[in-house]
Length: 240
Image 1 (cartoon, helix red, strand yellow):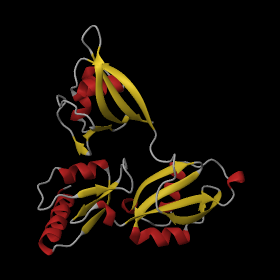
Image 2: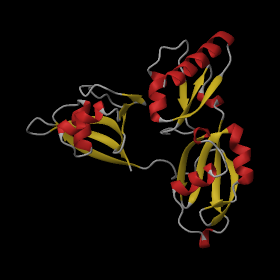
Image 3: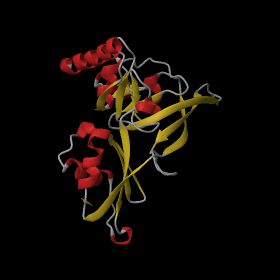
Image 4: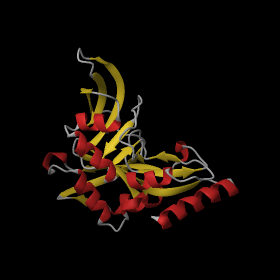
């Protein structure tokens, strides 16, 4: 990780000193967390092609509108006879072309069609060479945005907790004992707004995005009220 930190620092310094925009490849949540923990000459913008993306590139010296990210639609030539395709099928097909994982962002599967975000440097190569996914023959084309209805699905829920401490809320959302929820912090599995969170006692604020590796992801919305016994009723949006 030291080499990765040094690379982030070098990119930020180059952007700051030369006044140019520079970009990373797609970063995992752990990579984004490592980046956000550094004291840099210039604050990066994280963008994965759409709001809520998990894998995102870091942009130094420019906004998200200048991100070198393109969106590819990958659909079976004959949907009628195509097998049911999943995320693993689309990712495996792209990686089989020799494309590195860090060049590919999120892949959304909607109505048996894959929507793949990637760096612009590999877009043409994938588009020209990807001929099949699983047992289905496919065609590829660039589109500007995800179709309506695609993207992460969320479900609004209410949970009852004793406080808005992060460990308490995680335990309630994922039905975990308080001790197990605390263990997740020691195991470095809890991310708050893309950065690793080490404090179980953190008090959630409206709009906070919480990701727990191995369990899922949710957004804390608001406190709806309290029960007669004084427990808090919190509204969350859970990714499903």
